[in-house]
Amino acid sequence: QVQLVESGGGLVQTGGSLRLSCAITGSMFDPEVMGWYRQAPGKQRELVASATVDFRLKYGDPAKGRFTVFRDNDKNTVSLQMTNLEAEDTGVYYCHADYGIGGNFWGQGTQVTVSS
Image (cartoon, rainbow, N blue to C red; front, top):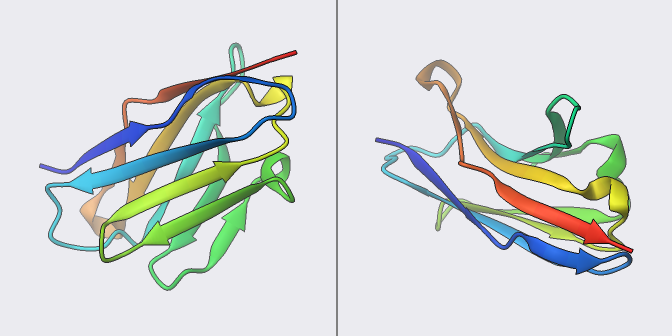
């Protein structure tokens, strides 16, 4: 059974940095795409950043220039380094793995709160 386990969320001041990590267990194959989404209160879930198995990277508009996604196929992990955080970055961050026809899987979410 595929499981995504996230860590690294928390409370940070405006302008600070956080690193989120996600480890996939129970999978014999590499996901086609791994990445991060976020959901702020009252808003839809949106893409933050993703990486394909051959390391093509994609960033959502809020992440461009401030966040960096790292993927490690050997360890089956994906991380998100977030810098210069703003109050608008507050939300629940979800790890996501897309196995194509094998299905999509989500982590349980980790809270990121940016305070001024």
